[in-house]
Length: 218
Image (cartoon, rainbow, N blue to C red; front, side, top):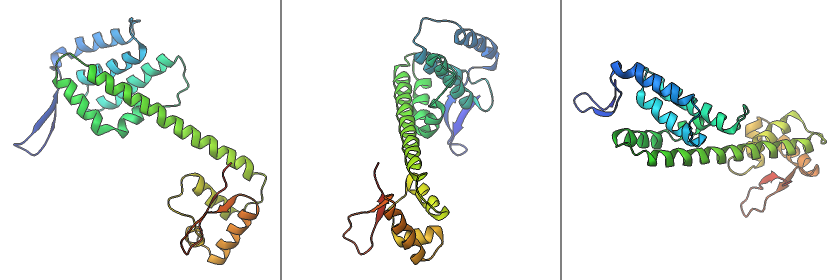
């Protein structure tokens, strides 16, 4: 089986899987190795397992997804925990171009997989950083809503506060509030003033003609 791209007559072969006659033996070796207690760093084993499986390429479709699942499974073994707060699979999907580039380079090269291992470990590091940022955002949002629970907030205000906590793009103005909530500018202005009085919103320093507002830092 070949992985090919390009127009007919100008095809580019990215990868050619082992012959089908070798498949059964290759998979037996892989499964035995994966399930054995080899003297190898468990995170490195995840990187090698991913590369090994996707190179054997036992199926017509879905090999990449299964390889990512295998890597995540091995990482869970490495963590010695069934609770996962990050996903290597999700990070690889985000970096799919770089992933396919390093995968093709490794599969077409010699038996030296150092560059693949370096990329995999760096990708894992980025997955952990991304998860830390997500968790920090969730915890920050939870702290805000603990404060909001002690205030008197309307459904309109709750909707807008959620948008601010989820990462509002640009500056918040009365006109934007009115447009998003679908209310009059007078209603939007009253909603904003009420939140300022409750010490939830503050005015931003602005040199423009419009007044901007933001959440008060906690």
